[in-house]
Image (cartoon, rainbow, N blue to C red; front, side):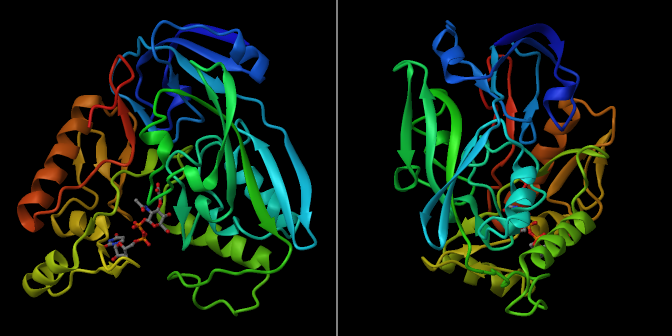
Length: 336
Ligand code: EPU
């Protein structure tokens, strides 16, 4: 266990606001967690690719950094990969592709750690973590032990899970169990993959995902960002039909429960925000759903942009955009 005090938040958030963090404690094992005590609820952080520090943080930051993985045969076609939370997500995907293990190849290049993946049920190109997750190991601060939470009890939804609700602030994810398949199982329905042949090799899909993502999403190391800033709103079919009558071009993707997912990028672009900046904070020029920090951006500029986007989209379409990124105040509470 190591604790750093009064340090800059810049290396701890890919949005790179220059806040101060009171303490950052890194844990290398569950035994170290058992020796940890805090009077205030810690902020659990992975690699900071979905977290923005809007103020200097007085709440303690905790990170579980152990990153081993073990592979167990489940049946002739499937393996269980038990991965500790500190493992980098993309490195895990790259390894799985090398091993010809199917299930997470569409989730290539998603920034962040394995431990963060279940929290928002990371998803891209027709696949989400929930599709291969068997369980999540969660160290409970009060119970002082690891609870194994079966996937069926993780309440996975679109960018959602029990870790954002009942278990929010209650503990820290220490490992994730994934079921991967030796049998090819390509998911090629998403735009950008639909030209690949039905028997495409896993490496081909992996490389195509990397190419598509790189063509429209800025690499956080090059241009500070936290990926999609807002969730894509899901609205009732009736509301969508009414909107379609007024705005014929509005795209919508019908969900299995007959609701409609509307691309937030379209709503934001229509309101003139593509490439628009408030100081150094702006909507990315190639994909307006991604909010970027061109270098010297401030929390006040970000607040201005987010408020303007939400107000204009609400006024034009009656849709409330919800932030997907976690914006934290001094106590570590989300501000929106
Ligand atoms: N669109 C526009 N203008 C643009 C770009 C997109 O109008 O400049 C509209 C189009 O209608 C397009 C639709 O948005 O068809 C969807 O765009 P895209 O496929 O790029 O997906 P997205 O909704 O912007 C979501 C996820 C991404 C994920 C991609 C691919 C959310 C909040 N975001 O983005 O996840 O990589 O799909 O599956 O669901 C993230 O969560 O950080 C993230 C990057």
